[in-house]
Length: 264
Length: 185
Image (cartoon, rainbow over all chains, first blue to last red; front, side):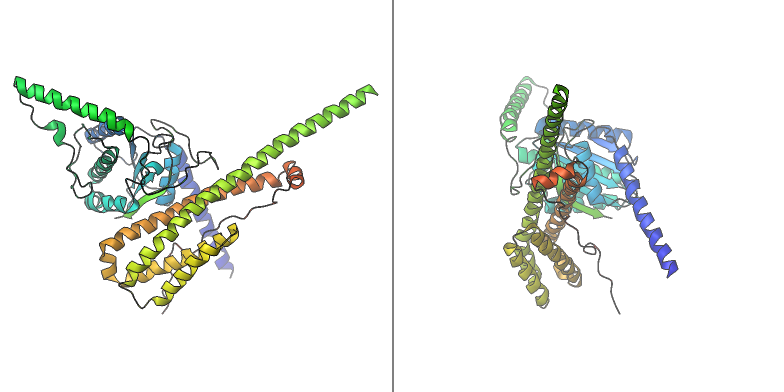
């Protein structure tokens, strides 16, 4: 009997320690940009590529996509951790809540996409699950973490752009399958060979202007509401003090646990 | 004589100001718990909207788990009848464990698990349960703030005088819902 008491005490202490360790980890995390590579999974070139792509996505659609790698959650649970990190950093624009967090804990072998309130219509849970199954997990199984995350981020960006009615001008840093977005990848719009001749240049400039024009119109229009199916009331009053806030490059968006998680 | 009158008036003014401050603070904390609970109900409603679709899909493959389906249907109608916050929390907790058992039963039907429609539903259910966990945590955080405020001195004196509840109940999670039940031989 006495033994059991000590075992239980030890278990409780271990659980408590785990909770506080992951809490401490969370409190110490500061965004390093759109890509925060704490696990060191990215080569420098791949990281800057993805970073500038995500900056373009933000400029054209307003959506903030954060990619975060960690070695471990220090005993934390990924769903809970992702939601708290999302709230702490305030991913997405305040009021729009158009942020996405793609979080991988490499040694825990856990990955999650957490979706801000404003994008739950464009990215329902089942779709985020499919992105993980089709784009991220197959590469993770070969230990290609940076590539898996890049594929996942591009898939998310294309869907977000589609929802916003925007064609992304930046070439995606990875080619993803078309089945997820139902539209061809956006690369074709600018990166095709531009003829050097006068007429070719004129056509190119014309197309470019039309694209800019369309972005100017639709980009503004779609900002109003992309809530889609989920009609949840967004309480802007900060209740427990755990939501809201922003730090680093993010703009104070919040999420409510939408998305999907996988392990591999 | 004049001096004592002055002191008494100052003390009364201070008391009135303090009680106004305490009252307003309690009101906003109380309001926060209501807002947080509304959020909890929104995500619980989402769960109940998902259930018919889920049950119908599972039924097609696992027809003879009928007792579990009946229980889920019964709990779903109980949710519609529940009025108070505590009643709702209680049915929600029971539903959570029934759904957890359903997802364990599903493990026995490989064809169902491979069904595309079911895989999507499984993600929707997991996402919904996670939303509930998030809103539950936020609700419990504001309830904790409220409970601390009404029990602390000196606000507790005002709280009683103004008729605030002494303590609000937390919305507890099912202990074992997330874990698979152990197999007994």
